[in-house]
Amino acid sequence: MDSTRCIYTNWDYFTKIKWAANGNLLQKTETEKSFGTTKVELTKYLSFDDKNNITQILPLWQYFRENAKGFGWFTPSLNNVLQKNVNGTIRKSTYEYNQYNYPSVITYIDDNGGDTKSFKYEYQEVK
Image 1: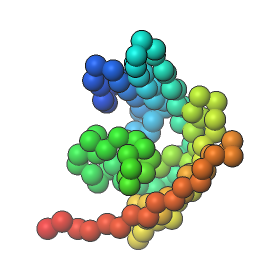
Image 2: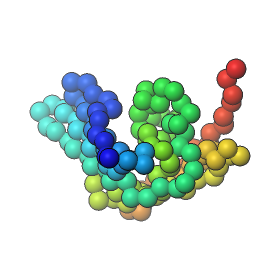
Image 3: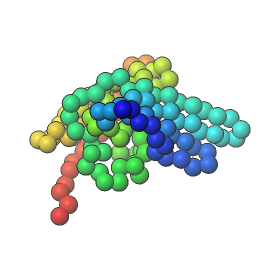
Protein backbone atom coordinates (compact mmCIF):
# COMPACT_ATOMS: atom_id res chain seq x y z
CA MET A 1 0.00 0.00 0.00
CA ASP A 2 1.36 3.42 -0.95
CA SER A 3 1.54 6.12 1.72
CA THR A 4 1.63 9.91 1.69
CA ARG A 5 2.76 12.26 4.43
CA CYS A 6 3.94 15.77 5.08
CA ILE A 7 7.64 15.80 5.84
CA TYR A 8 8.30 19.49 6.41
CA THR A 9 6.05 22.47 6.75
CA ASN A 10 5.98 26.02 8.00
CA TRP A 11 3.77 28.99 7.14
CA ASP A 12 5.25 29.50 3.67
CA TYR A 13 6.69 26.11 2.69
CA PHE A 14 5.05 22.70 2.46
CA THR A 15 6.42 19.36 1.22
CA LYS A 16 4.21 16.37 0.52
CA ILE A 17 5.91 13.04 -0.17
CA LYS A 18 4.40 9.81 -1.50
CA TRP A 19 6.19 6.50 -0.89
CA ALA A 20 5.62 3.16 -2.61
CA ALA A 21 4.92 0.08 -0.52
CA ASN A 22 8.54 -1.07 -0.99
CA GLY A 23 9.89 2.04 0.79
CA ASN A 24 11.06 3.98 -2.27
CA LEU A 25 9.70 7.38 -3.20
CA LEU A 26 7.08 7.84 -5.87
CA GLN A 27 6.79 11.61 -5.94
CA LYS A 28 7.34 14.81 -4.00
CA THR A 29 5.40 18.05 -4.26
CA GLU A 30 6.94 21.21 -2.80
CA THR A 31 4.83 24.33 -2.45
CA GLU A 32 6.39 27.67 -1.54
CA LYS A 33 4.47 30.89 -0.98
CA SER A 34 6.32 34.17 -1.19
CA PHE A 35 5.10 37.75 -1.58
CA GLY A 36 1.67 36.72 -2.86
CA THR A 37 2.89 34.14 -5.38
CA THR A 38 2.91 30.35 -5.12
CA LYS A 39 5.60 28.15 -6.68
CA VAL A 40 5.00 24.41 -7.00
CA GLU A 41 7.74 21.92 -7.86
CA LEU A 42 6.76 18.34 -8.71
CA THR A 43 9.38 15.59 -8.60
CA LYS A 44 8.61 12.10 -9.89
CA TYR A 45 11.13 9.41 -8.96
CA LEU A 46 11.73 7.14 -11.95
CA SER A 47 14.39 4.60 -10.96
CA PHE A 48 16.46 3.41 -8.01
CA ASP A 49 19.52 1.26 -7.38
CA ASP A 50 19.41 -1.77 -5.07
CA LYS A 51 21.84 -0.34 -2.47
CA ASN A 52 21.30 1.34 0.92
CA ASN A 53 20.16 4.96 1.14
CA ILE A 54 22.02 7.05 3.73
CA THR A 55 18.73 8.02 5.39
CA GLN A 56 18.43 4.41 6.59
CA ILE A 57 21.30 4.95 9.07
CA LEU A 58 20.68 8.60 10.02
CA PRO A 59 18.18 8.57 12.89
CA LEU A 60 17.32 12.25 12.41
CA TRP A 61 17.41 12.41 8.59
CA GLN A 62 14.24 14.49 8.47
CA TYR A 63 16.26 17.48 9.68
CA PHE A 64 18.38 17.40 6.51
CA ARG A 65 16.47 19.05 3.72
CA GLU A 66 17.14 18.01 0.16
CA ASN A 67 19.69 20.37 -1.45
CA ALA A 68 21.12 21.30 1.95
CA LYS A 69 24.61 22.72 1.48
CA GLY A 70 27.26 20.09 2.11
CA PHE A 71 24.75 17.30 2.51
CA GLY A 72 23.80 16.72 -1.10
CA TRP A 73 20.47 15.64 -2.44
CA PHE A 74 19.57 12.69 -0.30
CA THR A 75 15.93 11.84 -0.24
CA PRO A 76 14.24 9.69 2.41
CA SER A 77 13.95 6.41 0.55
CA LEU A 78 14.93 2.77 0.94
CA ASN A 79 17.31 2.87 -2.05
CA ASN A 80 19.19 5.61 -3.93
CA VAL A 81 17.54 7.58 -6.73
CA LEU A 82 19.11 6.96 -10.15
CA GLN A 83 16.75 9.12 -12.19
CA LYS A 84 14.04 11.66 -11.42
CA ASN A 85 11.88 14.14 -13.31
CA VAL A 86 11.70 17.60 -11.75
CA ASN A 87 9.13 19.80 -13.50
CA GLY A 88 10.05 18.19 -16.84
CA THR A 89 13.84 18.16 -16.34
CA ILE A 90 15.43 14.72 -16.10
CA ARG A 91 18.14 14.49 -13.45
CA LYS A 92 20.37 11.45 -13.05
CA SER A 93 22.65 10.31 -10.25
CA THR A 94 25.60 7.94 -10.19
CA TYR A 95 27.12 6.37 -7.08
CA GLU A 96 30.23 4.73 -5.73
CA TYR A 97 29.65 2.57 -2.66
CA ASN A 98 31.54 1.58 0.46
CA GLN A 99 31.89 -2.01 1.69
CA TYR A 100 28.45 -1.81 3.35
CA ASN A 101 26.67 -0.72 0.12
CA TYR A 102 26.12 2.86 1.27
CA PRO A 103 27.04 5.74 -1.08
CA SER A 104 30.57 7.06 -0.68
CA VAL A 105 30.59 9.31 -3.78
CA ILE A 106 27.47 10.71 -5.43
CA THR A 107 27.40 12.60 -8.71
CA TYR A 108 24.30 14.49 -9.87
CA ILE A 109 23.80 15.20 -13.57
CA ASP A 110 21.24 17.59 -15.04
CA ASP A 111 20.29 16.44 -18.58
CA ASN A 112 19.39 19.98 -19.64
CA GLY A 113 23.01 21.13 -19.52
CA GLY A 114 22.90 22.22 -15.91
CA ASP A 115 25.44 21.60 -13.22
CA THR A 116 27.14 18.32 -12.50
CA LYS A 117 27.96 18.07 -8.80
CA SER A 118 29.74 15.42 -6.77
CA PHE A 119 29.77 14.83 -3.04
CA LYS A 120 32.04 12.50 -1.09
CA TYR A 121 30.89 10.95 2.18
CA GLU A 122 32.82 9.26 4.95
CA TYR A 123 31.13 7.17 7.60
CA GLN A 124 32.22 6.80 11.20
CA GLU A 125 30.85 4.45 13.78
CA VAL A 126 29.59 6.22 16.90
CA LYS A 127 30.28 4.25 20.06
